[in-house]
Image 1 (cartoon, rainbow, N blue to C red):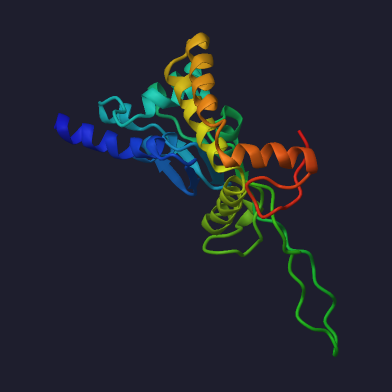
Image 2 (image 1 turned 180 degrees about the vertical axis):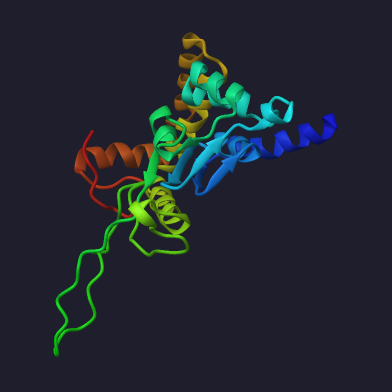
Length: 235
């Protein structure tokens, strides 16, 4: 049994060992092992119809695949105690307030089209274009998109997660990887002095990278770093 638990723990921890940031897109009910899975990811988004429950205490066991180790760093010790001991279900709005998710994807209301007439064509949908990472997706996009009250569903949150992933992918790769590693190290090694030494070691090793030179050059010229020369705000 212990070997089986350790194997499952190791599988979920692969998300933290992945060098690049890992996103979770949650819709519907996320219970027990689902919470273990998403707390191991780096960013969490959910649809408006999502709910979360640390259910294990009702099954006479403590959660053993990582929730109890990771959740306090995400929502705070007191909130983690509340969720883990009561096994109560929290909806998307409370999950956002607690910091369990960083964004709730909502379905956009579609603008009314022109009045029908002999020469009228198909009604125009919402304007297309890049969205804010984790922002709303288009109504009717994918399975379960947009229910009553614009809660959104699978298609909406997946679209939002893909936009967030694209925004992360546009960042300088080594900087994103280093930020993830340093934050995880700071969580696991909470002493400030150790964290400062760790980030100094990490960044010293990156001084020879081409990406750092490109980022510094881009900050002076306004050219993008880590993307195909797109505009980028100056530091």
